[in-house]
Length: 129
Image (cartoon, rainbow, N blue to C red):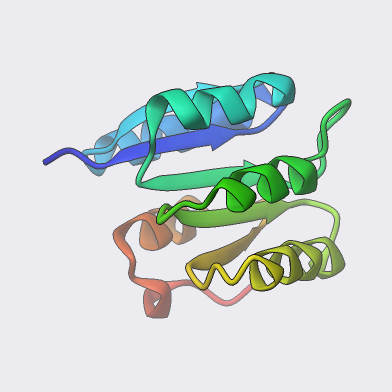
C-alpha cells in the first residue's frame, strides 16, 4: 500500500524538494502552496503523513495544525519552521494540547538526508544541526 504525504508550505521550492524526496521513497504526494487550501486538502486527501510549515502568510500553520488536530487524525505530523526552535516548540505544544503524540520537528533549512530519514521513520539516523 502506498503511503500518502501532504506537504503544506507557501514556498513552491520547498514543496517541490519535499515532493521529490518523498516520491523517491514511494510516497504519493500532494503539495499545497496556498495555506488557505490546506485544511480542505487534508480532508480530501487523507494523508498518512503531513508536513506543514508553521509560519505562512494569511493563514498561519499553527492555525491549520489546530484545525486538523481538532477534528482528530492518526496522521504522523512533521512541523517545520525557519524561524527558530520557539516556533517548533509552539507546534509541539499545540499537538500536546490536542493529545497528538505523533509529531516531529524539522528546522529549515533542512538537509535532504534528514528529511528522508524522517519520512522513513529513522529519526536516529538524522544528522546533528
